Length: 105
Image 1 (spheres, rainbow, N blue to C red):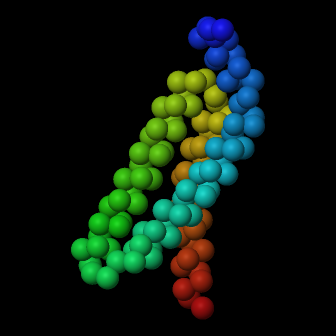
Image 2 (image 1 turned 90 degrees about the vertical axis):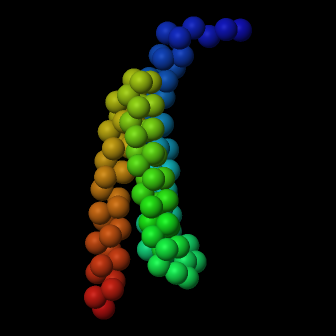
């Protein structure tokens, strides 16, 4: 049974609220893992490995952010789009502040 594009888009729009929740939770987890990966260096023993870990983490973060923005804007999911944008921009700064506060102790 073939589903038309209009039907698919209307189904997606009806699932905007649950999708937004799932996307924000996934973004929070991804940001935590990427920050840990960049700070811990993923077992890096040399400066070059540490730099490569930072670069890879930044690429993963940037691609995830851009892909989510394009996907959710194209699918017409405004709640999910705004949730993704907020989670991806606020989580790294909050985690960075948390790490800095914990290092001051």
